[in-house]
Image (cartoon, rainbow, N blue to C red; front, side, top):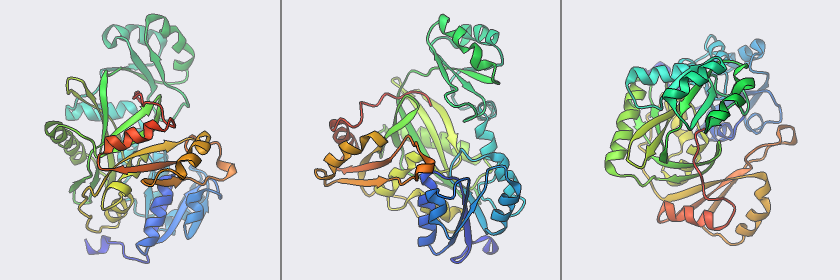
Amino acid sequence: MAEEVMFPGSTIGIIGSSPNGIELARKAKQMGFKTAAYGPNAESPVLREVDLPIVGRGNDQLQLQEFAERCDLVIYESEQVSSDSIKYIERFTKVPQGSETLELMQDRLLERAFFEQLNVNIAPYATIVSLDDIYQAISSIGFPCILKPIQKGFIRDGQMILRKQSDVARCAELVDQGTFVLESWVPFDREVSVFMVRQADGTLTFMAPIEVFYQGQKLVQVVGPADLPTSITAELKKISTEIGNNLNYVGVLEVAFFITATQTIYVKRIVPAMHEAGHIFADICNVSLEEEMLRSAAGMPLTTPRVVQEAALGFLKPEDSADIKTQWVLKDNWAYHLFRFPASMMPQSKAGYVVAAAENAYRAKEQLDSTGIWDEAETEEK
């Protein structure tokens, strides 16, 4: 294994342009690595943060090859990165995460087949290629249900919630664009994420479970650690372990779950990369996800994570700037993390986030809610 370890002075490449990449680059430089980044915009904060920025589109093979050959290893910082691009990069350098899991999880049908193979509990679904398929599937799927393209991120605003029979006709134009899955709506009470780090030898290290809150399809708040019954925590870890043991992957993984009022657990999805909900660990744990990602990729031993404080995280929209100025002079327990995207990358749905620390994470969430910046979070399937 010694030859697999990356030491300070090695070059770590980052592909992707989200805030995850910025934090990865900063942490990599702090650990003594040289850094490179690849993305389509020279003004991207990720490219500006690194030692070697390389500009190119995701399918630009010449630029991808140049980037890969100048890196000792490459990390993709988001599940939005094309699996085809990662496959190509693997020909020229080491990608510890690999392309296999990314490709699997970017296709909802492959993802569901994987879950079924492991016999984990997921929402009932049907494959849809025509409007007639929806009419036929409704009898078993029932209302409400949600229509999603099989390729994640393929169609912007490509999901549609169906609540009654007359809603089906509204899907006609959408289903003409490709293959979809029709999934039963899970009547969940809570949504929880388990983050784990998988090492090259298959060892899994778990962060504390966190509770996440969505409005529509946007993540708005995160609470950590999640207050869960011991039995539920144990079952979440058991399911996550089964998933992690059956993936060919090295690095950070998120497994997202729905929990119903009767304590039934459904697996929602897997993210084989950094995810924005994981920002909270830098404030509540003795180690950040970024550092654990880098340690696993570089073949280093992982830090044993432990919770050092409780907190709630709230994502900010650009229009929240005036409200934040009010809190800026009032709150002594808020940490501010504001994104600095250039005009060429605007608009962005998120302007940053704040983390409120407290003796109890849910009290911290109440403090966020009391400001009026965040409505009471309604969780919906993403």
